[in-house]
Image 1 (cartoon, rainbow, N blue to C red):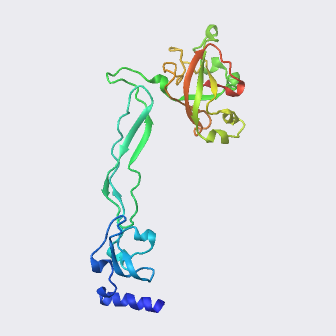
Image 2 (image 1 turned 180 degrees about the vertical axis):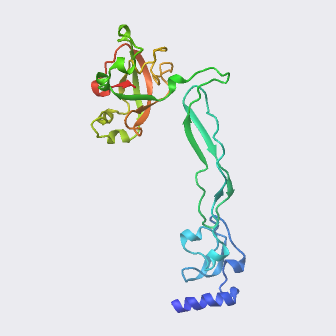
Length: 264
């Protein structure tokens, strides 16, 4: 059978019409086209109806010369466009960049890659140039146990003893977090395992994390309403991060220890 097939291929080179392939019929159809067929030898060495449309690569009924008569053409794309500006100002949103298709794939060629990419962004000024948005920067948090080890006067000399107790507590409801949080098992990062979606957590804002002028902690979301999604990141494992929404501000935190954190 192999000898016969080789003889047929040799005959095709000497007399193309003998095998009645795609080239002989001048047919080469994109996609799936049941009408794009001829009668001749197929790639599976069966004589009969053979197809010259792209779908024949999947169904296995291509004419013997499909690859030569209908060469595969991969998708070709242009360069990425510059990043757009943020979709909105003064709150976390997204920027986008795109690239155009210069050649559509044909005849089983490589498909087009991703044509659009999005990335998070935040602009800190209004269209009029007024400062805004600082309350929405990612909140950096760590275990509340760290507060017991932190010597405030050493870390932040501008804080005097008479305002040592200045501070407040923010309550958030967690919405999402990366799976890396649950994988942390090192002694100083094990606290991340207790972060859970849908739980209310307390985050303490105390000196020196508190700005001595604004008396605010970066990323506390105090100016947001309860519908705005805010971002947080665990200090000690950049891959442990997620989102939450503000519940309220209270004077003192009252969450269980495993759900109590501090801004840092």
